[in-house]
Each structure stands twice: as C-alpha cells, then as structure tokens.
Image 1 (cartoon, rainbow, N blue to C red):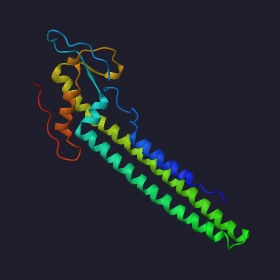
Image 2: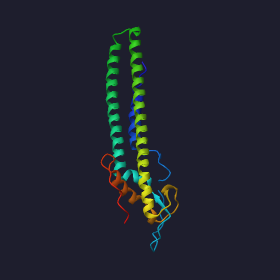
Image 3: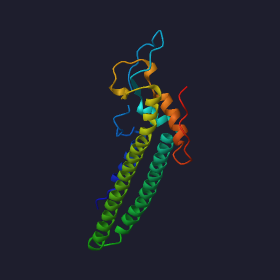
Image 4: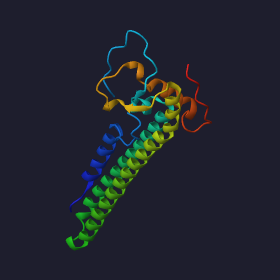
Length: 205
C-alpha cells in the first residue's frame, strides 16, 4: 500500500513558509529602496522628482497592515486545517493497516487503493487552497497600490514634483526628496484601514 501523507505534510510546510515570505512585486511603476546621500547643508528648492519606498508604504500604512493581517489569518487557518486533516488521515491509515491482518489480499487491495486516492485528492484540494490564498493576497496588494495612486498624485502636486521614482531604482538621493512618510500619513488619513470612512488628505505644511 503506497500512501501519500508526506505530500500533505509538505503542503503544510510550504504554506507556513509562504506566510513569511515577502509578496512578489506587483505594484505600479509610480512607486518603489535606495541608498540615500547626506542631507544638504541648505534647504533645496521644491524637487522636480520624489522617491518612494513602496514596501514601507504597504507594511507601515494602516490599510496595508490590515490587508497583511487578513492574509496571515487566512494562512494560519489553512495551516490548522491541514494539520487536522493530516491527523485524521494518519488515524485512518493506522486502522486500515490493522484491518489488513484479517483480510485477504484481494479484499484489502480495493480498500488500500481507495485510501490512496483519498489522500491524493486531499493533497490536490489543499494545494489549490494555498494557490487561491496567494492569488487573493497578490490581488489585495495590487488593489492597495491602485488606491494609493490618486493620493500620491495629490502629494506630487502639493510639493511640485513631476514624477515619483521607485527607491529601488535610485542609486543615490537626498533624504529631502523621499515622500514615504508623507505618503503613509496621507494614506492613513484617506483610507484608514480600508474599511472605515475616508478622510481627506491633510494639506501640505
């Protein structure tokens, strides 16, 4: 009898690993970490470009944290379900092994095949759930940045910038052109955690 319980254990391990890995970059090109140069000795005129750390925008804003908490909760729930199913299948396997002693090979073979098929179906079903969670998480992250675009555009107008560069694509920049802290504050004011009423972005000081 060839059983597939180890495959189910691999699903649990993969799910827990996925829950701790940083999501793939799926954000719009307007956003994005860079090394920063020394602060200028004197104030600079309004920059024509600004930089943005898009990972900080997501992980430190209320809306981004709420989406990440939702994804983590779903991941943990599925991991708990997988462990429960694994325990149930282990019990069923032990019972089937015990029954084997009182059955002829002809009588036992269909039972073993049915159990193997059940394990394979469970493995496929749980793997599909993992993929569904990944897809939902990526969609939430994409929706977050889509919601951020008009707010970032308002901030560009407030500081007189013509473009926002992803900090990952910038080799060297002054801290004074980094928009991340102001963008986080603006998103928190406008979007909150993504569920409550939205407030207007406060004017620039």
